[in-house]
Length: 294
Image 1 (cartoon, rainbow, N blue to C red):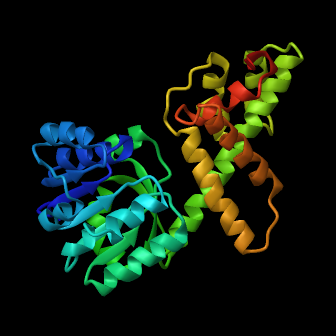
Image 2 (cartoon, rainbow, N blue to C red):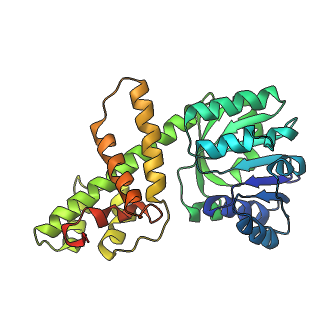
Image 3 (tube, rainbow, N blue to C red):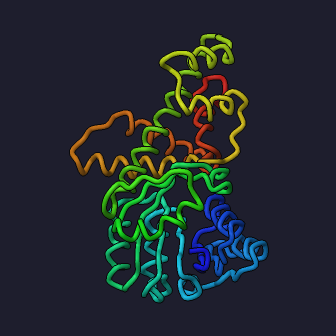
């Protein structure tokens, strides 16, 4: 597999670090593309590959293409616009890692297979650091035979992989992962905001939370940032709003009323309205604490 020429579409924080990891473990990275061309050029210089100006050149130059784009519109653009990845589809493997609507993953898989490509869905539940270290957690969907064939490549990026089902199923699960994470983050901000309003010592509060049913992974990752008001972006509020919207749409399709999810999305939408969409989701504390309202 390490003779496989690799291409990347979308080289923001996650995509760039995945590309670095694969280069480090011996794969030839052939081409990178990003709508922010300067980012692609900088990474290409580092990796010794081409920063192409047309997305179709990525699939032309590569055997396996990873896509890590922002949303449904971006995914449709790279696959279905006049200049698209499927222009050179036959025999290529496309690994789609974006957190987008399941229906779009299904559409891409269908068109890709029709064009002679192998297409798998591989959203990630991990951080930028995990991407760089090859410690991602992949949720996988698509043709199981193709996924099994791709395992050596995927293992060089991950510590664990879980097959979920056919096209769209990994995207559904990823939406649920982010839904619960985002609700937990908003809930933690509210608990700490009330503690602050009551005059409690927030360090004591978080310590007690950690030893009780109030404990969560979010307490560990976002709690200190909420206390320190440090919101460097690992997972932006804008992404939290987008992903909450995906989950909300799935709930409505199933006839479910999920008031916590609805309220959570409203809070992240409000952050965007206030110009806080690009800070980390932990910044929800800034609009929740009474003492921080400005």
